[in-house]
Each structure stands twice: as structure tokens, then as C-alpha cells.
Amino acid sequence: MAAACPPDHCASGLRAWPKSTRVSFSVGDVRASVPLAAFSGQSVHAVAGIGHPARFFASLRSLGVRVIEHPFPDHHRFRAEDVQFADGKSVIMTEKDAVKCESFATEQLWYLAVNARVSAGFGEWLQARLGEKSDE
Image 1: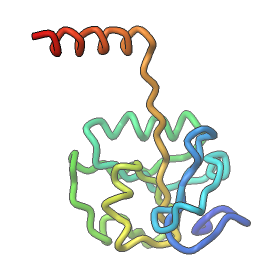
Image 2: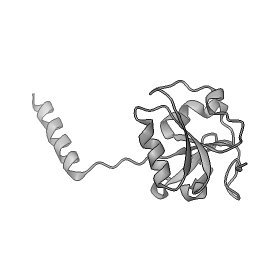
Image 3: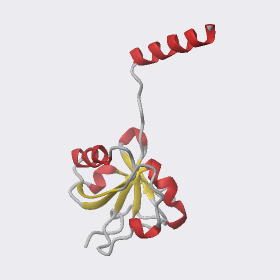
Image 4: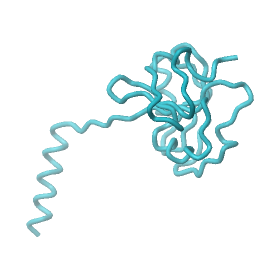
């Protein structure tokens, strides 16, 4: 059976990773974070209530995590039983879903922080487009 959280990284509540280093944060305690590499080679339950959960699962796999998939519909209203598994393995979810699970967070619940980057070309296009709208 896998540990609730990687050795030497446990704290109460859910865990998270800093965005710049691909870390996971605890859902119940965002001060608790570990490098995603701490889960490399481990089997974890991956939970996602987003439009394309397969993309989230693939991201975890690309980082060396062995994923047991649990897709939910986009905007799913999570309940404690949705993220409780008898095997004691860690649960990694999206940052969006973690917000919905704070009230029933356990030491097994972690989320992967997301850091979106906009290309320079898109930023320029958007600024120009917004300028056009303000002129109308």
C-alpha cells in the first residue's frame, strides 16, 4: 500500500506543488507542497472534473506518475466519497477541483498547480482586438 503522502513531506490536509517547479499542493493545507517527482513511479488516483480529463491524466503520466483514472463531468460538485478510495493511495486532482474539496480534505488529497502562459503573438492580438472594441 502506498503512503498517504511522500516520506518527509506530510502535513495535515491536502497538498500542492509550486507552479514553477511542477509541484503538488495539499488540498487542505496549501503550505504543504512537494515536487511532483515525489510521486514518480507511484500509482495514484487521478481525479478530474474538467472538460478534457484525459489531458490532465496524460500530463501526470508524462511526469512519471502511474495514474488510476477517475474522470467526472465538467463542473462536477464533488462529495467526499468521490475522492475516498479504500487502498490508501494518494489522490491528485486539478487545482480547479481542489477548491471544491477543501471542506472534506484529507492527507491523501493533492492538487497539481497550473501555470498558464500566453504567447506573445496572442497577447498582441488580444490587445489590438480590445483596442478595436473600445473605439466602437
